Image (cartoon, rainbow, N blue to C red; front, side, top):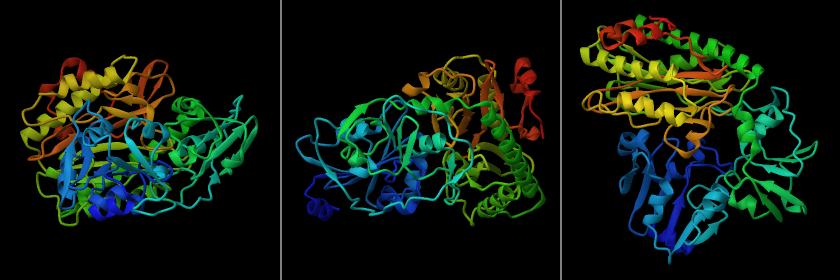
Length: 482
């Protein structure tokens, strides 16, 4: 890598996990961070120095990164509260040159490196990949939105939301790969923005530094579309209910498949799960399903789905999955099953995670920050050796991860959760030497109360009722016990 740095006349190189649309869940073929490090997780960037390659990952990926990275890569394990770019900047000498790919970094993120000597690169020196414009279809009606001043929207979910366009040609996505110019009632997809002479509203957090440099008279403003699309309409809520009816059927079918067969591998279950989703009307998965047996279930975002890991007697399997249907809204659910008779430890962990879900689901807070704090107060230190190392939940919509809302300890988690907002509640406990349990329901808020889209029940043989309070047992009656 030293020769690469010399050829670019830089001292450091920031290698992003996103593509030119700043998309988080991009194909590995366009993920330069994956090419460089071998780490396949959805988030986390890398820094190349003359002596080392540093990979930065949050708590979801600590173990996975250790297992996947190539030789010579140092994994920097971010703890809750640590910010990736602040840790990256600690490794950089401000007097030396940092290379950043202009098409793969937002303008806002680029400006966070003010004070550092930055050289913008027009091409990615690791992966020179250009995503072709897709040919989306009109899936739902466009949103009535006519800003007073011209706007340039480059966030794919926002473009898809405003135009009603969906593109199911790429697996794990319904987004239309396009950029949108809006002025009054005029809407232009993929315009030559460099030719526009007037003032133009842009959101520096979602526009690439490359596109930003083309704009002659930018006006900086947080995109109002982010908040608009976070509150789903009555039609979107109904579409989501139908999507989760199908998702529940697919997950129930995979449970039956597991119970009826022996010697199933993670790969077998994952393959059959995709078939079940398609059978019940899915156009694609909303993300690559996680099927994790025993110790693998302790990796919050495990992605291998191995042919060599077999579900044996007494083994746990965690399945985190979802799909896109006609509306192009992503579903998301996690359930844990056991093959045969569970151990006391399995029941203890499962029930403790279930307690956290029930308490969060029935709490009455304004912000995701408060819901997350409640879950951590129940789970942190509850069972020796088991930890809860991620946030409680995330928003869902056109992308399986949206914000707001957010149920974690981030700044955006202080945003009020309002009627119409859709999000997950997914507490978990993990021990790499044993197993992990995560129970995830996608939910929505309406009339001031949280409701669950997910109707898929919980495993009766994994519930230790002696660990539940009378109130928690009453709350549990809302859900089916299998």
